[in-house]
Image 1 (cartoon, helix red, strand yellow):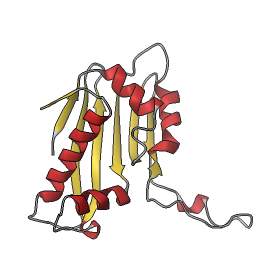
Image 2: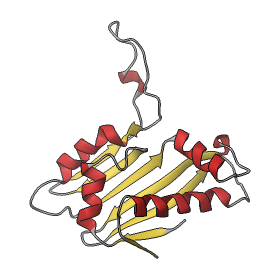
Image 3: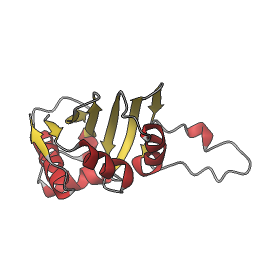
Image 4: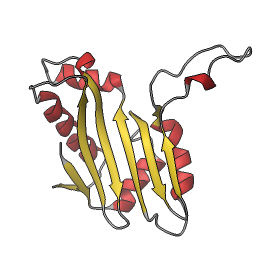
Length: 167
């Protein structure tokens, strides 16, 4: 687990909300405080997609909503002349991306061992921090997935031209 303090919040927010840079993620949850606190549970409600006689009963491919689909909703809540009081986003990397990271890193762990590679994005009104986390289905003494995830996030932020300091 690593924490990355973002040096240029405006640049980061532009990439997060205005580009497809974070589209490899799923939105697990969001809490955004502006004039109200808006809370989004990113779990897919399967009942919405099934049961109607006009439905083709095709479920979305993930447990959580894709960031690409939720980005505009979050942008609409955040945009305006005033800065949000705070917000927290919990993003999960898509499973196929996790599998690719594990394979490229020659990890002795498989996708079936990893519940999520998590990126927590927290803004407190002045400072924005990204914190990595790895969720496992069971205890694993091997810390390789954590290191691979941290390395991936460092590379991702650098490649996305997002300035940060590790803390």
